[in-house]
Image (cartoon, rainbow, N blue to C red; front, top):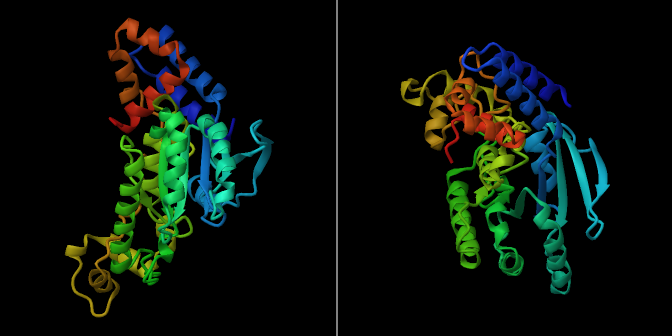
Length: 345
């Protein structure tokens, strides 16, 4: 167990043991089952699909390692097609990552790759299909989705589509100081997202997600991508992924003067400065995120207080409901996550 999870368990145990809303027997069971979930639940498995060079490794690094090198991994082998499964040690725990090949531009490879997808994709908790934002060629992706989900319709809800390298999209004038797309790029990214969504819905009309443009290299829009991954995960496994989240800090790449100007107060309260940074922000039509501000879902949620929402929610259950929850450690862990985060979706 990683130090992150040991600390998490210690704080959770202390808070539950100090609660006066649960009986001693109930407190013991809650702590035991929560500890069991942390120690025995298999790590989340992410299947990444995309061409070489679209930024699959960089995406994992940005979501779970926050700048650490991706080389800290132990290679194992999936029995199907000997596809490598990387057990990546993120800063908040391990996860399994299966790096699948993209369809490429050679139609001769298509039957083999689709057969490969049919073997491996059903083993995923969530499938992240990464496409380069500037690449409008989606016809092979559409065909693969038709062939794959036609025989496995249950996979549709696990699909997440990301358009990486948003910083490289035309007209290639990313605002390096603000670490944000220029207005022209923002408009183009919006068009790309809508176009990609339309094409996916054309072959998967029951898909309910949304395409997210982002930049793993610039840590841009990672929260939106992570949210889509959370919602695509089976509900009882969401807590496993959320507790491993360690997003790259978007603001670390923002010019310090711009950041200070944007976060000292609201832009409306900042007086005109010529040609100061606040005025530059206004002219660019940019809004920097408040800082310090945790992404939502929150990173590494803290344990509840003695009279916190988790123990109160548990105490509000009927004995039958509590017994049912304590009979499934994974459901208990997900219950804790939902109460702490107020996640109603």
